[in-house]
Length: 249
Image (tube, rainbow, N blue to C red; front, side, top):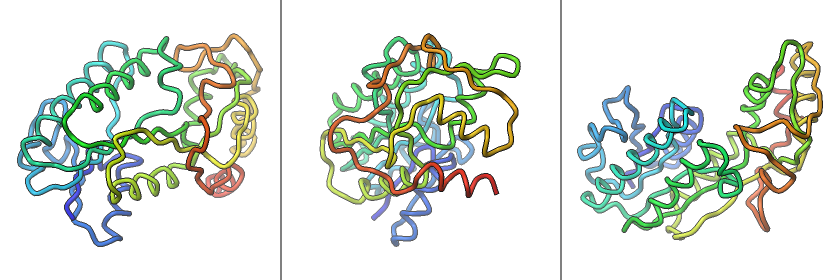
């Protein structure tokens, strides 16, 4: 089977491409650096010839409100048109758990717009919503840093390893389209302040974590339901402590 991975050279994309190739499939890792740009449409028609499945794990290079919305809307419209012309039978897209609960954030409004365009398209689809990746914890800390303190809320999260996200996306890409959304999460919930505290401790970072209930996440206020999955999510097997132990090395 021929599959195209949009964003195939990124964090999740490289893992998805590797996983699909290991299962014996023909896979094209599509990205602007390869002359395939879903935002401009460059190279899409040629890349999709003979493809049965398109996996979209691309992310916007800018999180500025207008730029990120433009990125996801243009990309999705171009993909839908090219997929229809090529006869693609399954569109798989990676999104974020809690998107509809975080619309105060421009990034999540853009992800919601992407999801709505996917659902309105004629292409059979599966949307895979994942919680935050363990690999993002350093970025969460950086965004919340003031001097030598990190101000984050104690809101509950259930983060997941990127390896586990990629494995799930591979499984979905090789299955029949669901025309619905599934959720992925890590094996255990943890509060955001404790998550960041454990990360800083494991990496020898001297910054101090201050629990601040008014601190925002990606520009939005959050509570215990904002970033956690609903009933019966697919759970990745990797625990944060295991990932930290490997990463600290």
